[in-house]
Every structure is written in structure tokens, then in C-alpha cells.
Length: 221
Figure (cartoon, rainbow, N blue to C red):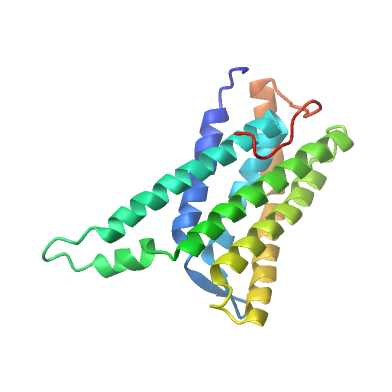
């Protein structure tokens, strides 16, 4: 594999924002009268980073980072369960707070894993394919186009798995649509930043990968 100067740093940023999103996804905020996860404010950064990974380094590198995220998330969830299960010391009165934050329902954790894996791979696949179709032109069309599909899959899967039966069906649907539109909107707003980061990395890494011979099987680890 070609040695890259910044690939590891970008991978760490991607994993960090994913883990932060896992730990905070349970907090709902009110947006236009609908409850949405607070992660709509910063989770779109993971898709921006995924766009950078795929655009500069290629689909295979981005897929590898998604698997790293999944492994890190599983390990974090196991540690959280240890935190929840071990009894507190005498005099420690904040244990209930830890139980509420880290004792997430298993289906919420599972929903996050499925949503990240499916949404991330869809986003990267579409961006890589559109780069071939456009011959590397019109970056904004593939960053936004891939986000529309990837963010929809991510949001719909997470909310459906984690919150169905908790929120009424009509509220759940509206929450999915609201969360999806906010995420895509954030990505659109960040398009100039994406252009600058992509352009800078391509110059510094001397790389502009085209997935002409890539195996797009998302199950390859």
C-alpha cells in the first residue's frame, strides 16, 4: 500500500466522531417540533470525512475505516457494559447518571452499528461511482448526491431500529425526515470546506484515486 501522510489522522477523526455519536445518540432535542437525536448537529462530519477518504484515497480505504469504526464501537459498547454492571463504591452518588448514559438499550446500540455500516458504505459507493461517471469533475454533485442516499439510509435505519415503538409512527417518520434533511443541509453548508480539504490532500499526498478496478463488495474486511 502506498504510504500516506494524513490517512491515519483522517481515520482517527472519523472513528472519534462516530464513537462520540454512539455515546450521545440517545439525547433527543426539539427541532421544528419533532424530537431528533442531538447527533444531527455533528454526525454529518463523519460523512464529510468519508467523502474525503473516498475521493482522495479510494473506496477500499474508506471501507477499511468503516470496519475499524465498527470494531471500535463494539469494543466501546463492551466497556460501557462493564461500567454499568460493576457496583459503585460507597459514597459515589452519580452511578444513576452512568446507568442512564451508558446503559443504552441493546437495540439502540445495534441500530447504530447497522446504520453506520449501511449508510457509510452506500455513501462511499455512490461517491466512488459518480467520480468515474463525471471523470472527476463536479465534486459537489457526488458529495451531496452520496450524502442524500447515505444519510437517508443511516437515519432511517437507526431511528426505525432504536426508536420504533417508543415514538408514535407519525412522529417517528417526521423525525427521520427532519433528521435526514438537517444532516444533508449541514453537508451542503460544509461543501466549501470539503473542497478545500480534498484539494489540499490531493496536492500533499499526490493522490487522486479512481476506483476503476475496485471490488466494491462491502463485506471485504
